[in-house]
Length: 283
Ligand code: G3H
Ligand code: 13P
Ligand code: ZN
Ligand code: NA
Image (cartoon, rainbow, N blue to C red; front, side):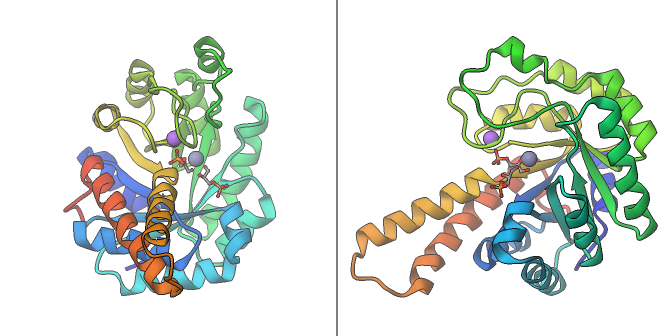
């Protein structure tokens, strides 16, 4: 069933587990995510980035997402990931997404507040919840030093002011994760997370979670993260499976055989993350 993202996250926050938010851009990825949720009896967020919407079409993502949610025996929310284009955010709201992210992290603090507030006002009028980002998460950059990275981390006092002034429903914070695969082992600032959690009364979101060791994810959930975004590890499972089946069966030409094994591999990956995040059995 299609559900309100805010209710899903508030429940996770109250009970102390995290919801997995998994990126999708085609039918097989979406089906893998929702099938994993059913196997695990877990509530789930399926999300699409602006690039994914451009690739598949907002209408296709909407139609597939809603159908998958409708057919599912578990709660499913549909979310726009990293919205930066105001018009596209409005389009997603109109197409029935249950939540949107406004990513104003590239702007100065006050500017980020202003654009986030504008989206929150409109989204809340139609009961769509909003995630924002404070601090810069960015991609994996090996040339960047730890102190340079820490300069981009979320300041606890700013997070409190940001939440109060914008009325946002959840907040993505920067504590050392990065989008994409990691070069070395990521070091997360758990003290900062705990401090933000103790001061902030809305759900905290962790981006860039692919490649973060399980133990660090467990610690982050213990310290109050309620939504965890995974994209890269799903892409890797998909691509590894496709490479293998094509290498093992060079004569294969049926896309269903190729994508079928990719789907199975993605189901395994997503199910494993759900167990790790503690959302298994919470539907
Ligand atoms: O946060 C970024 C997500 O992994 C989406 O990536 O913009 O390539 O779809 P994308
Ligand atoms: P990963 O690609 O590291 O899983 O990050 C996903 C993400 O944060 C999507 O918003
Ligand atoms: Zn992200
Ligand atoms: Na990552």
